[in-house]
Amino acid sequence: MFVVDAHTHIVDEGWMPKKWWDELAKIYVHALGEMGIPINVDQVKSQIFPNFYDPDGSKLIREMDAAGIDVSVICPLDYGLALGDPKTPIEEQNQIFAEIQKKYPKRIIAFVSVDPRRPDAEKIVRNGLEDLGLKGLKLHPASGFYPNESCVYKLLSVAREFNVPVLFHTGQIVQPLRSKFCNPIYLDDVLIDFPELTVQAAHMSFGWRHELFHMGATKINLVVDFSGWQLIARSNFKTFCEALRECIDEFGASRVLFGTDGPYLRAAMPDKDFVEMVKNLPKKAPEGIKFTEKEIEQIMGGNAKRIYKL
Image (cartoon, rainbow, N blue to C red; front, side):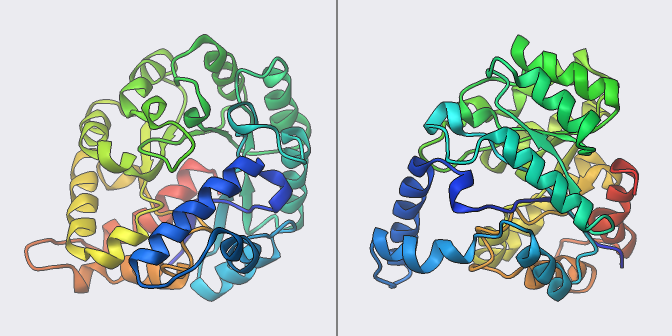
């Protein structure tokens, strides 16, 4: 089976704001504490976070090989205006992602990203798509903007010009970013005003999934990935299966994409385990929930072949 991870990341310490790492460490302290594993913020930063750092993409390739993932879509993240600019500017990060894509042309699809409120955002996106050869646009509204704002529309116009997909984070987000900007209802204007664009809503919108699913039934240029659901899949397999089944029923199997949102969740569930869990759904779904082999082949990679022009 051809497998595409339609939503993952590579990160390095200097690519993200210090405040991001500080707040994320607190979340890990809380989560591990709930599991009976005592740890403090400094220990998280020194013992856990370095495992995420992957400045050349080599860790991701090894993880893909172990998991049986053929192609991964990688997305930089620009949280600078929200949390303070990191050591490595977003322009340089886009360049690094382009270099990794060039290094692994059959394995990696890299997107360009920028906060649309930056004065040179349109120039950065155009450079990424035209000069760097990046294959799509990633936008993260949780930094403090709504998807239907005029500054975003300028970037969507460039994406439309280059006929590339646009990936929006949707659903709740960890502190200190703001979830209110990520309600999928704000994609409604985007989908109507840019009918030629393929818009990818990330994470099945987590807690707003029902709103997203109904939107998927009525907006044919919207696709969805279910990256980031590993914790729920591990702790409540039936809930995960029910959500995925409803997603497929509303969107149709042709517009649903597998994803991991790595690297942050690999400690909870290695990519290999998540891949195998989804592959096995036709045989191992909970009683009363059914998935067909054809549906799983589509969501694991068949749809991505079409959407990303593989």
